[in-house]
Amino acid sequence: MAKVLAKALDPFRLMFIEEPVLSEHTEALREIANHTSTPIALGERLFSRWDFKKILSDGVVDIIQPDPSHAGGITETRKIAAMAEAYDVALAPHCPLGPIALAACLQLDAMCPNAVIQEQSLGIHYNKSNDLLDYLVDPSVFAYADGHVAIPHGPGLGITINEEAVTRAAATGHRWRPPVWRHEDGSFAEW
Image (cartoon, rainbow, N blue to C red; front, side):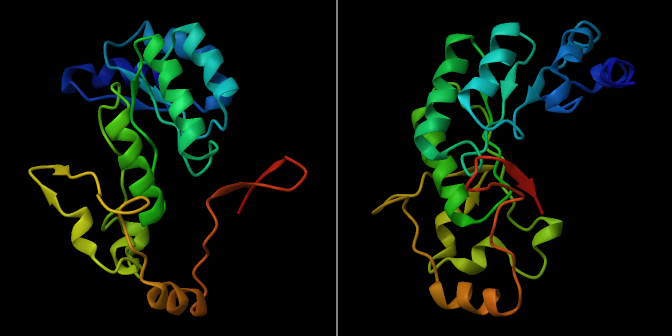
């Protein structure tokens, strides 16, 4: 059904179709790509440059979406982005987590010439009780103007965390780990 849906969406000239199949089924992407002119994005569930190497060498995606919180941080994500650049594949970092993750992604966007758009979760439905701006001393660092946000400046990632707000959220049971994390034995788990 993914190829049928992809073809049906073509008239809407979408920016991209995100993960038309799970990343475990990349062999299906070539067939889907043959049925649409809409770019295909994938990668928020891939965790290393070796995971990305296969989809890049297969030429089946137009945009990769590594998540620095899951893919080894800024350095590893930069390596993934550089590898994608060599294949003329765009970058749209995945970022559904908090202000530190967003600040890291924006720093990556500033140094990756193939960055095209930045996912973020400001005011999104699953942040109703705790928006990521609640954890910043100066929330204006992520102020948007005409659909753009400036790269944060200053020490570190350019943000200052409001530690009192984090402590309050932790006391009410906010879960601070990402949706997928690596155990000490190297295996992955979901919550």
